[in-house]
Amino acid sequence: MDSPTSSVVTLRINGEKYTLPVDHRTTLLDALRERLDLTGTKKGCDQGQCGACTVLLDGRRTVACLQLAVAAEGREITTIEGVADGERLHPVQQAFLDLDGFQCGYCTPGQICSAIGMIEEHAAGWPSAVTDDVRPEAGPPPLTDDEIRERMSGNLCRCGAYVSIVEAVGRAARARPDEGHEHPEATVKESVA
Ligand code: FES
Ligand code: FES
Image (cartoon, rainbow, N blue to C red; front, side, top):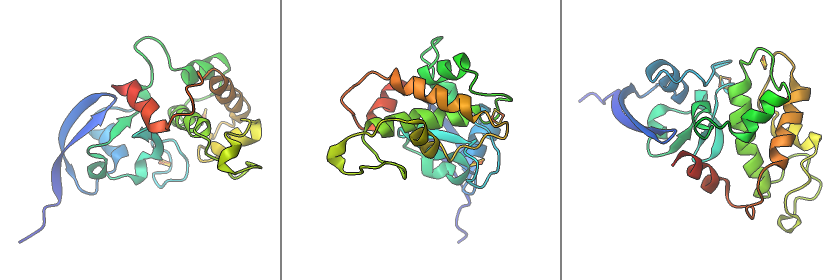
């Protein structure tokens, strides 16, 4: 008997449930853009190199072009369409606007989703490759420009808006209320509930 090549999946995206049949080879990125019309998530390289397709899965940033849609069933998916609180922009979105953290804007949804995940990772004390003191008891390192650049290095900007992007991410991180360094999953789940 032939194995099935498609399945009906239910994806929970930005607090809404979407049920649809998908070929098992369909990426989460293609499901979002081509099947659900959620075109805020961008396709750049389609091979995990540029970060344009970054979304949050259970609060963790991930590149949607390397995720299969069927594997995202049961997870909390947050795209750029879901980060604002109604009419109020997410602080990262607002900082990008205020500080001109973009030019053409193509990389911007991925930059913003990545920054949201990164700020929570940092607050939870996760070190980066440029962190001097990686002992858990040292806590989060100062979020210097070098730290931001390293932690955001998976998101490329063809326009080269990096100076403003770093500034915007830093401003948004400093505006984050100190909630005791909770795990990143908890924070983003609240925002999509
Ligand atoms: S489109 Fe996914 S990383 Fe480039
Ligand atoms: S703003 Fe144009 S690619 Fe980043």
